[in-house]
Image (tube, rainbow, N blue to C red; front, side, top):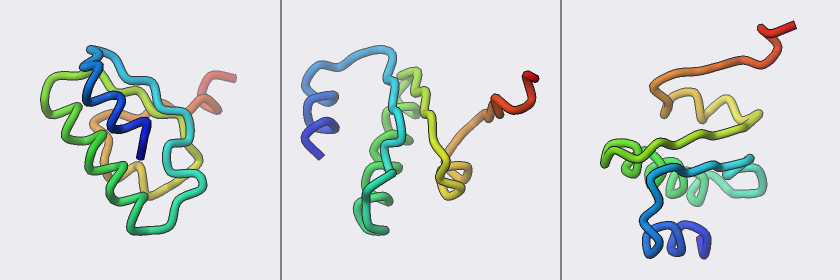
Length: 69
């Protein structure tokens, strides 16, 4: 949650999130994903690396690295 607050204050144009929901309960996972979605809707570039299938419902595009063998 501190990282999300810091992002809001710094206002970057590109956000890299590595497993942002990895150790979160469902409520906090929802909060993080909603925040990242809002940032993307505001014109930010949001790149997320994850194993969490729930994240797929929040993205505009997916790239599966296993497709690049």
